[in-house]
Structures are given as C-alpha cells and as structure tokens.
Image 1 (cartoon, rainbow, N blue to C red):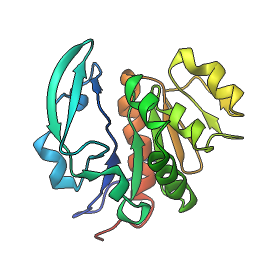
Image 2: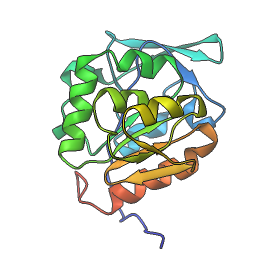
Image 3: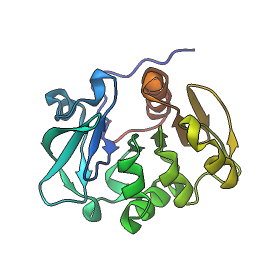
Length: 190
C-alpha cells in the first residue's frame, strides 16, 4: 500500500555530516548542498564551525555550509535522523558522544532513526541494534551480528523505528521506508 504525502507536508530530516561527506554514485548525494533541501525543511547539522569538506570517491569534492552544530541539535528539533554512509562519516560519528546521545534520544522518542551503508556502525555504538533486524554494507555483517542484530540482506530493513540500508543503490528503497514512517506519524508543521 503506497501512502501519499499530505499537501504542505513539512519534513525536517537530520542529515549529519562530519569532516568528509563522501559522494556515492547517486545524484542525491552530491558534494554540495542542493537548494531544494530548504524547501522541505532539511537541515544539515555538523561538528565543524561553518563548512564541511566533502570527498568524491578519493578526491576532494569541495566545501558545503551546514545549518547548526551537532552539539546544538536536540531530538525535539527533528522528525527523523539519517546517519550518512561511506566509511569516514560513520567512523567519525561513532566516536562522538553528542552524535550517540542524539541518536539514542531520537530512538527513545520513537522517531525514525535511519542509517545507510556503514552508518549502522553509529547505531551499533549507540546501542540501538541489539535484537533488531538490520542491514548494512556487506563487509560489516559480522559487526552487525556481533552487536546482537540479525543481518537481513535486503535493500531496506525496517524494525520498529530503526531503518537501515546496504548501499547507494538502495537509496530509493531507503528513502521510501523513511518517508513511509514520516507520513504515518504527525510531522512538525502540520
């Protein structure tokens, strides 16, 4: 059953980015801040002062400005959290106590808490995947199961409010799963 978004839906997604934001092979993950994001209330908090260095494959991709520092973000300010993929972003975030506390608060409030590719590393370190069904980048399967999760080899896996996906090729299924959870709940601004 496909749900349709209500007219005027205002969704504020949390797209956390750290030092490098690695561009995957999808146009939705460009090394720049797309102008259409603000129209949907998307914000990009980060742990740097004003800009984030992006990486395109193994080359520098340029700098993007972000909306607020991670330390200033609270779960009450967001309807969903999305942990980015690539290896560097999640590896940096999993060591950040603010990121872990934020994700724990989002999950505790029952808000969609999502991760793609290596992003489930952060959910593991936040203690959110124990006894959950989840997926991830193929090389992380042992990490996932060692954390007490059940690995499922599907494009997007939803277990309660936790949503995971394997890779950039799964972005359509991943965003559909996140969107379905958002449409099925009251979203700020409605």
